[in-house]
Length: 405
Image 1 (cartoon, rainbow, N blue to C red):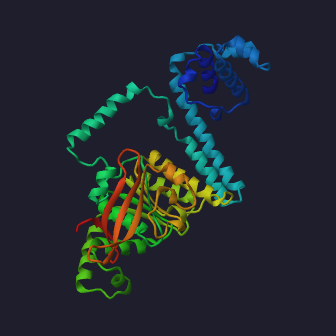
Image 2 (image 1 turned 30 degrees about the vertical axis):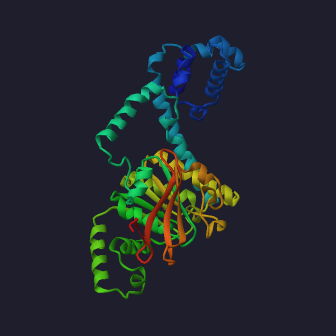
Image 3 (image 1 turned 90 degrees about the horizontal axis):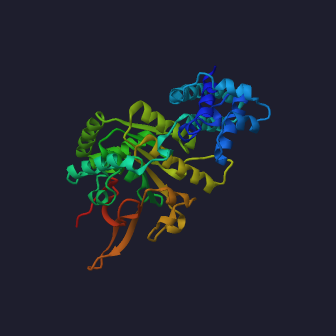
């Protein structure tokens, strides 16, 4: 008797297994087995007992003798082990089918989408099962106790900006962070500041800038060296000394970068998963959301919505913070931006666990001198407060710093 038939016999003897099993129609290979499985589920769903008699009545082509054979010498207590074997066989069949997909699909992007969907389906995710709240209490108390004993230590990875850390508690695993700004207002710069400050193994997906450009900007941020002098090569002796120190520091850090102009969403997901699997990155930075491309068959706002939902899903599945830069609409130029100003899709504001806007405001001092003051506007924060954080932005070295008078 095959594992699937043995499992069907267990279901016939104990319908309550349906409450607990992860087996679905997609895991059943043969047509007859599928008919029986579907009938058992349908009867059980109606509130009746799915036994040999009721299933034989439901399935006109399956006789009672065939069903009775399924229950012969069956132990219901071993259903979990049988389920594991069926799941493994199902996964193997799905992976073998991918070879046919690759051969028959002419559109490469479509092939990648199908493959990703299949791989996602193979990942059994326990977070979507029904939990009894009392079973979650011990773990929750342990985490709270850890925070209490840490005496104020951040639960997440530091941003390097004290006031921002006070608001969002650093970058925490499984959360989706979005930093929005208009072009040339510091989107990439703030992500690279976070990379420089975080001091953990991290990944960067860049759909706009090449990896060498990003490294030169990090040299400027970390070494406080003028970007113009780095770009032109007209560096002072002190600049070169600072950059050498930065190079030494970064030679001992693990920062994994994948850059591709207008990166496809599927490529981004594959590379993020690869970084986590091969290098166990602790945080992922994406620059920037609207610079990626999605399914060409969808309208642009639908593509961006799909990208945002995928980034949020990545944070949960990889169990790391995902920090994304996003562009704001043209109407946000010259005014205080709000969470509704994300370009191309309102889905971003719905998905984000934390949404922060970069705001450079022209202000006049009592002396009459006009200055530009820089703010990070925490517009959305699921687990904390919202508010305006004044920071110092030094554009010549691309540095965001804690504000001082």
